Image (cartoon, rainbow, N blue to C red; front, side, top):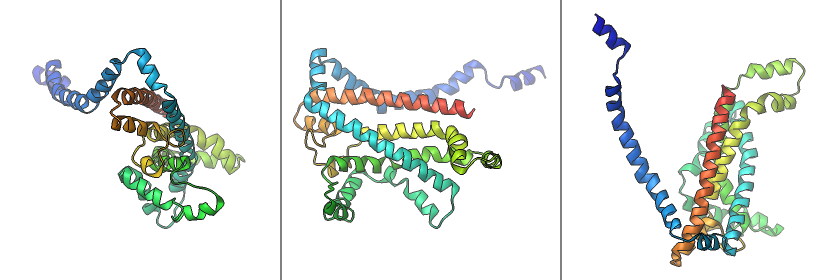
Length: 283
């Protein structure tokens, strides 16, 4: 009886627990090492072969600085657009019922499944001067395809789902009785939104916006087809890396790629911090 009680109280001894955990841990570490850590380490080690002066010269070349400006500024505006429009879309999907709502909800995830090259061809066709939308903008003197505006359109398209899918479940979990209590106390709908609804979803909005920004910074497939890829005009950093590889300029590609890697890691760290803040806020 004593043995059975001990076994029920301590179902697994530390040695048995370690044995059971060893296989999942081994598989996880092996998988992450091969798929993620080794490629990243290879890039960092390759960058370490460059002297600091050489690395700085390649990473801060005029054309590289131009691509950083185009990439990050355009990605910032694309993320800002998705922040506002994505939050509004999530609100409509959660709070309203309308025909073909399920179809619209499914279409939002299309940028996740659609190959970026296909997205680039589609956007370049639609926004060209002979396209459905481009032909309407052309008489107004607005060109989209093969301009920096086209880069922004591609980034907005690719990042559509991030804010929506981050904010939508938070809105679904909000207690509607709190809004009703605010209305009963005389608050307008606008005051209720700003003072009652918005504060709990701010962490989710910031998380989705940061994810959208990080995704836009690394976009390549759709941008390369809708932009002219001309230096100092609409050339972004990921395409510059590819161009330098085509020119057999491996040190230059490594320097710019390392800069993008470091910035991407900082953005992902920011996303993790925001998600932790969101969890604490929810708690």
